[in-house]
Length: 341
Ligand code: KG4
Ligand code: ZN
Image (cartoon, rainbow, N blue to C red; front, side, top):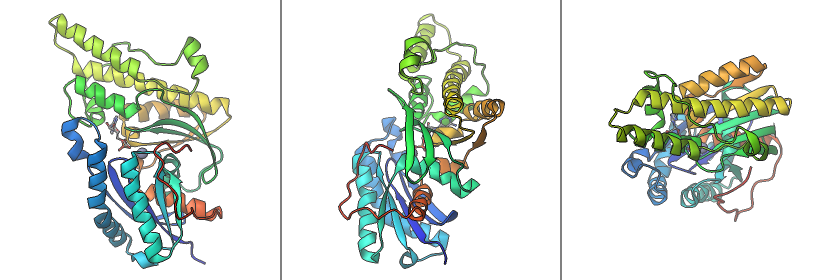
């Protein structure tokens, strides 16, 4: 018997995503982003994002179905991100999924956004080895997850205690006069620079490391960059943007990859998935490839279009949850902005 056709709905931040997956095969997906509407604010404005989801949801559903070559009535089950994320944004996707569930008389599965970021790799590289370590880095999250079973057993080893990695990229870019979202601009600027300035690596030594072995902190790094730039300007010197970008990027890449590889070593894990929008960063990719190779860890990175928020990842996780035989969610399941894994 053919595997069920799962429709996935994502709306936790500024991307409205719909994906269609059968088993481990991606049939098609569509994403509408409101990022342009947030540019002048220098960050995602929740109310603006929610309104954009409302406007984009139905057209995105239509586009995804057209791309996959399926009709809504062909869908066997619906999966939706119920958290974590922006409360109002999540509500739009959850409401849409519930409405579809009622209209089509199909079961609805509430899934976790972070788990979905990991599950999407199944569409690219097949079943996940168990256990797998996942490093998720985006504008909204920075997580180190030990995945023993994608549908039912994910342990959060560490997270950021302040800014998300992408948030730090965006804030530092602003200080350097680069546009929002700043990550890609820092990445590009850094190519012409050298990481000659030694910026701090948060939570990597002494008591901080003892207490926060797998956690991250980027606000001290951000402050150090701001101070360095201000001091340079006060001295009447030009700010070497490329060098600052390269040095900041090196500090982020160093900490992320060092802790991810350490977590693998200490938990006897030999497979890693890198995900989230910041996974597009060339230095983070380069360094994690190098350090994984040195440590004998196989690395899996989904293509960039599946690393950023999308509906395919939600459908991919939904398909795994169905395979595991889990019950659908109750009709009144809530959106939960701080849903744990
Ligand atoms: O996953 P994503 O598209 O959205 C969420 O935050 O959920 O990630 C967006 C973040 C932004 O902070 C952006 O600056 C960052 O990813 N980003 C990058 C790069 N491309 C995107 N950061 C560093 N280097 C990049 N090449
Ligand atoms: Zn995300």
